[in-house]
Amino acid sequence: MGLNLGKINIKRFADGEIYVQLQESVRGDDVYLVQPTGPPANENLMELLVMIDACRRASAKSVTAVIPYFGYARADRKTQGRESITAKLAANLITEAGADRVLVCDLHSGQSMGYFDIPVDHVSGQHVLLDYLASKKINSNDLVVVSPDVGGVARARAFAKKLSDAPLAIVDKRRHGHNVAEVVNLIGDVKGKVAVMLDDMIDTAGTISEGAALLHKEGAKEVYACSTHAVFSPPAIERLSSGLFQEVIVTNTIPLAQKDFFPQLRVLSVANLLGETIWCVHGGCSVSNLFQ
Image 1 (cartoon, rainbow, N blue to C red):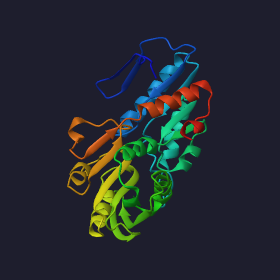
Image 2 (cartoon, helix red, strand yellow; image 1 turned 135 degrees about the vertical axis):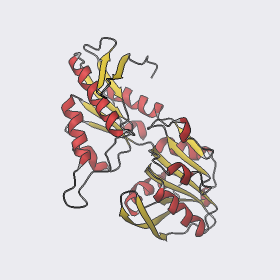
Image 3 (cartoon, rainbow, N blue to C red; image 1 turned 180 degrees about the vertical axis):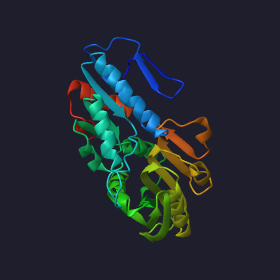
């Protein structure tokens, strides 16, 4: 964006409490706080809330929470009795802290935008992934886009349409618990093709790794894993670097530690995507037109 980063002092007290002090005046300014709420989710969410409160109390004209990765987004409905819908709770906290609007990238499910009682701008990291895949110059006749589960079919279909209108395949699985998946069947043809597996996030990599093993078994010559959010909870690194994938392509919506890098990993930046969107929001322009 060609701007200097605002100065802020964030520290922890001995008991773990978060302290925030702005190091420059924001009175009458439009403030954009960039903070993914990824691992450690609780720490980063609380830090965001305290930063919003600090800006509000410093008389900022408006506060926009720019959340490249929205933690707790998977808890967006009740699948069993007596469960919490934590995505709604997190949205309430951000709203009550004083945010005027939210900018998020690839929510786990689009309906989560409705959990916020303030305007939400939802952008997709798929544009960054598509640009990179286009640079690989893979023959369009060899491509097939694969959804690692039935729930991601709409996302994969839209991605396939933009990727030379590639055919679609679906991995059918049964989930027996959190972070536990069992692959059952493959719907579609991948024999002799370059398979691009697309998901919104990679957490423990169980789903996408089991899917990749099935694709190789069904005759795929190469498998690429694409995801906006690299959560990478253990044992994700071991699974992703096991030789199943030609490349694992992610974005930097979640900052990765140096120990999380491996030879097949490609990390793409969403800086331009978010920067252009912020300019549109700030100037009162259409965000959707930015991605036409």
